[in-house]
Image (cartoon, rainbow, N blue to C red; front, side, top):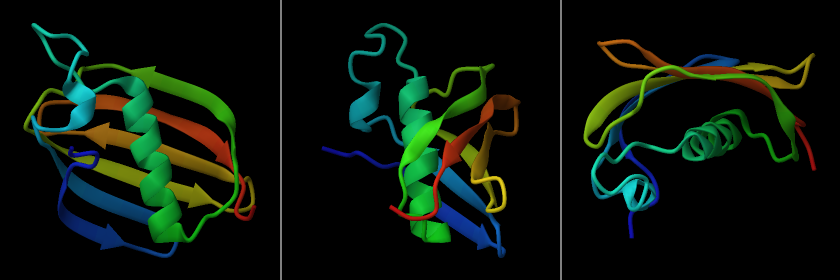
Length: 116
């Protein structure tokens, strides 16, 4: 059971990360969302952003809610996307954005405390 996409490349800075991800058709989250036209659910996109932020920025605190979330274009099986993450420690906010060569797929910001 595959839960995470294939990590193609990572670029890290002090408070930002750019991850190129292949959204493999074998990802568990594609199953059942929709059988005839599978797309990556928005909740999965948010969850992946939080998981990678915790991994690359060392965040261990709790999720505090979402502010602005936009889902513009579906992410389809086997699509390669770039997940851009920016951590604003002073605001305790994580900004994320999924882009591909074709378009912006989703973006938003959420509150996430640094420590549990």
